[in-house]
Image 1 (cartoon, rainbow, N blue to C red):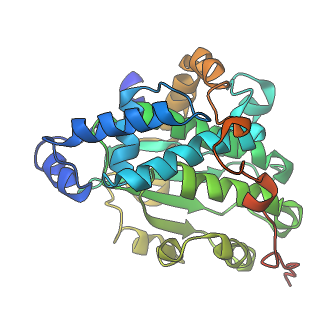
Image 2 (tube, helix red, strand yellow):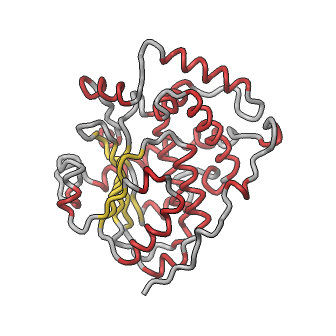
Length: 310
């Protein structure tokens, strides 16, 4: 079982190819890391110390652009203060989180595609899942994201998400909180060092198409162009090799249930660590210049129009 949970790390030729893709020079990366550490120490509103492994994950995710890395790190600590609903009480054994793990899955698969991408399959298991639980679903997704900041020891060439929409119904859509979705998308796009390469939507319906159109205004243009909607599983196989995919998706890879069980065990092992992380966040009172205005950051503007689905 333990082997299922492992994030298999790139080696050999794939490792070399990823170094090029991430703009990582093994001769200068330590200098870049030192520059980020020095910068962090000089920011009165941010933590003075942070571990080198996670800083390196940020540098890789920012293709070793120091300016982009600083912006992402500042946003990472800012979001931890701005969204307590995502970043506090992160104990996978709390009833409200444990319940979700029986109704939805969204853990990364252990292996990598031939071009070094990490693949995550997200699916609901229960049509009766309450959209009110969205914040807790997002909380678990960001818990997995935080563990990956530590455990992606070599970096990956990007992320591919497969979203199986088979259990989503019109009544779910009517209850979804736009502000939760917007906060989560800001988190993922601005505060985490993710290189999102592709999003594949399976088992689509008019409801899902409406949802995609609803979310698009909050996505960066390059991400909008990386969303693929499949009416047939065979077109997914053009992007993700069958030997990586679970059998539910026409593959001969690992079992999704085993992968998710192993990840839940991993999140449980990190319980104390999550508790210690709660206080590590931006302190807006100490930010030089103007403190972040959360209302402006998450401003819900004209892009939310009432959705009517026939």
